[in-house]
Length: 405
Image (tube, rainbow, N blue to C red; front, side, top):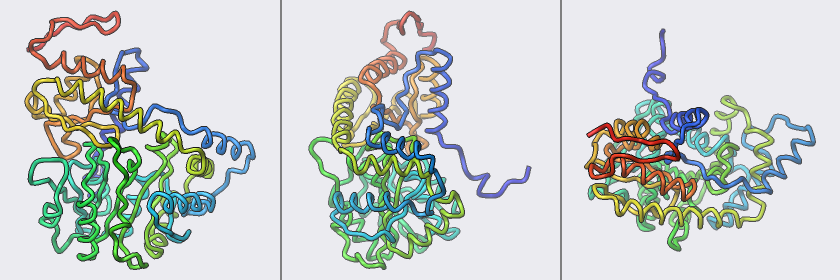
């Protein structure tokens, strides 16, 4: 079979594959614990469901403008004014089929083959593949001090003549790290000086802990004209627990949004009318659900961190946001793929290999499920890896016996 060079260079999404694996195991009746997921377990906001139901009952589910229905664009404008203190017009906004599509379309609009896009490591699994889909070159940036938070110097050292864009995701998937405010200020200033596009993936920006407040990139931007190369991406998936609704958006200069809209119009046309109305309901409805989710996640994080901090042999940094922890298990196995498969096979706990986020030896562990899943999952992992653990472990009525060294 003859396939394109780009097609041959792209791998599957490991996170989506693990979701599929966990679902299959559960359907078989296996007592799997999914600590690899990226979707909150709370319900979508009632306003989102009621608004979508009203639209569905009307029977008028038609094509939408490629950049989104006016009602959603108005809601996004209000959101941007409230959370970023930044005023925009409808021509600055494009709604999309999730934040992922917004980022992908932005990259297609700005990257030429062989140009480079830079992003700190650990990074979301899709960034390298998105760059490759554009024929571009992904360039991860590793913090010199080995932490999850790079300095501006780390980024500067990776920028070359082919660099076109920088992607920043804070709070970060997979580490949960919240980048320091000074770093955000520095990266905004640096990209303006070097005439680079800066894509701020803010999908988790309200899911932060310990009394922190979201960092506003517009606060540090000097150029707020139509020449600005700042692109802010967000969506309803995480903060409103609406992962399956697949609605996100991008805010950028008018010309770029026009080009992005043209690209999207040929890819998927406009996002689903029904799901856009659900997003309108979420954005314009009561916002207490976001705070409730944040409090729940912070409590889950504390439980997870306490359990893992007492786990000898691993290194763990306390997440400042999201619902992920990125723990270093290299004392047990430097091959994170092998380790993740071992844990799934032996104790039926799903984790995500760190190599897919740019750091082997680590596992991404999610705490967006129940506290019961978090505690039971860590207990199983500890039992599987601790050579001094008892020889037997009961999962419900099922007895597991250690048959490995």
